[in-house]
Image (cartoon, rainbow, N blue to C red):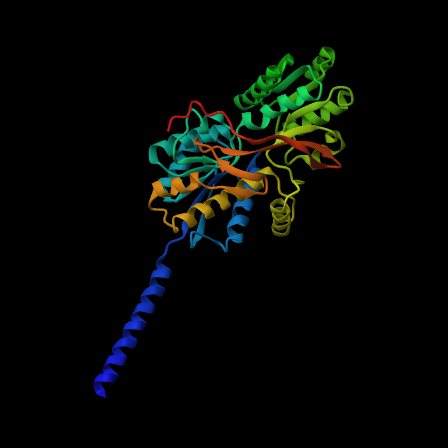
Amino acid sequence: MMKTRNTLMTSLLGAGLLLAGQSALAEDVEPVTLGLMLPYTGTYAALGEAITNGLKLAIEQNGGQIGGRDVEYVELDSEANPSKAPQNMSRLVKGDGVDVVIGPVHSGVAMGMLRVARQTGAITIIPNAGLEAATNQLCMPNVFRTSHNMWQDSYPMGKVAFARGHRRVVTITWDYAGGKEDLAAFENAFSEEGGEIVEQILVPFPSTEFQSYLTQIASLKPDAVYTFFAGGGGVSFVRDYAAAGLKESIPLLGSGFMTEGNLAALGDAGEGVLTTLHYAETLDSDENRAFVSAYEAAYGETPDAYAVHGFDTGAMLAQALEAVGGDTADRDALIQALAEVELQSPRGPLRFSASHHPIQNIYLREIQDGRHEVVDVAHEQLEAPDGDCQM
């Protein structure tokens, strides 16, 4: 009887130790640490906030975890300052020891981040910057993009412009790399169809004094104008274009970032403007309706493309970490899992090319009653050129 009692006590003690050990192990599992290198002050602060909001919403919808692990955020203000990018990136990777870096918004900042990503092998997800080289000439296995590049959103508009009967077009943007990349893609597509670029106008960056250029456009009498401006510059150009009386006689076409996030500021001047982009808040799909509803409930405003970039980054991480059982130590396995992610995103089907650039739909949008209404799919599942990528 004593032997049986001792055996029972030993068994109970062993079971208790096992449960305690399992509990301790559960408590010892460290969170996945995400380093957010985004602008939280200055001109692009709203973009950084939208990306962050979208990211956190996706992870909250996944039970607040990815790969069965809690998530810790290390938020670092990039200030959209390229000169600080290498130092900030090194701080996140070497100082804070984050598992994944998410950023940036500004393409100049991306250049500095990419140098550190190559040196350290840090897994990096770009949720906005449109720098073509990031997933082409400077591509690397550990770098992914959940947004776009300048070519992807502007090339389809060249085809659209010609199909709508425009044969002579003036293009205009700021005299800087991003704007010129955008115009080059439109001009290439439009010329391929047989259209003529009457004049390419480059405005000193970041000037928003457009009156002399609008007078020049009026004298050239093109069939349409294609432009890339963003933020306050986009608002100023659209307003000035309408005020100059050009809107009614010369259709205004643009990259979607001319009007993205600017609808309220544009007012009536934006009505009828056509843009191409990989997202519109009015997309008619179950995924987008659910996303818009959840985002509005969480943050009190309608999401834009920047919020979608963040949301899809969170969904991408959740799917990949699930595939590797939450293991971030095996970096090669995690990179492979990230490369194989396929999402039914609010923007539509989303997967990644061999260079880790998103393959996605590009939509033709028209501003109607202060909303981006989807007119058509300008190009289904468009893959950006990446012939210079060597991985």
